Image (tube, rainbow, N blue to C red; front, side, top):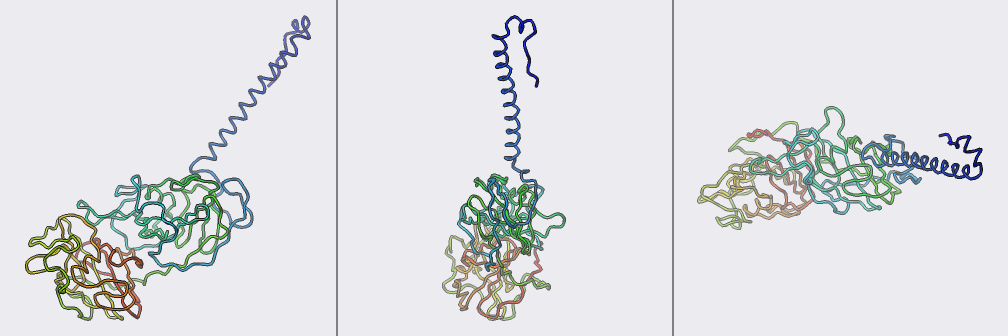
Length: 425
């Protein structure tokens, strides 16, 4: 910009009075203009810095030496800690968020191109940790898991989901491009930007990816971060970590490639052990755990689950006619020795393994399964999505086509059975 001087006639007539004033006015205008230009540049820069998905612009960078974190201060990048052995079902961190997807997440409707349907047969996993000021927060269970209803008695699951509070994200084997952290957060129904992680806001925010023992710091948009198979993503908010934790998972046994055929009226298991029907302390017609025994049970809600009990290496036959009396039938019962548990009820409830054992009249604890003593290991398989279960055995929900295997004593089972259901999956 060029300073404007007074006309020559004015300069000649009044050289002293006007020149300083005009120079002052002109310099003031120039200063105002310059301040506006600088303010505009700063505003654009701030907008870019606060953009939810776009800051960083650097993708992943090797995590070594000193780096700049999201708050702009240089810090020494953490190193990988020695692996901690973890079993599925273990809670890692302090509970903070409620279980399941939020009201804006996946509740059965399509989300980011994902449909909610039956669990798939080929699952893998990645792991997510979130730390706030050095404190780990537990990732909720049942993100992307929709419970059954009368309209959809089998419920559904998204391709990305959690079933416990380990932080393990279970995912169908991706057929094309890898899944992203943004897709998981969309199913969860939580915000994910470079300044807001599931409602947590603070500075600095740093993200690290451990992929096969190689640690990198991720500095691009969090929503595009690819989920590494068997890898680990760690997000730190506030106080940085000096070491990034790593985990060694104890995976369930592999699946037996030869499925067991389930036939109505058939038998599964090599050894008969218990008599058929309920015991003297089981269901005799009165309500058990709020479950009724009726002459003509309604089957508005009708699903099947499966139970296998392996004792010291022998697969025992589950009795028939558990919950089936001459005068009435309980909402949970067996018709044969296949291990199939029929759930036929007028409405949807949380039917549990504990309910079934109470109708049967048998104990169920971590050391006693229907009179069989020994250490008990439980596995749950939802159509190929298998894991070890570490919680209360009585609390295991019996949902459509769920397989529950209880291993009592030794030796450990070498494979998990798969089944060919007489009911389409």
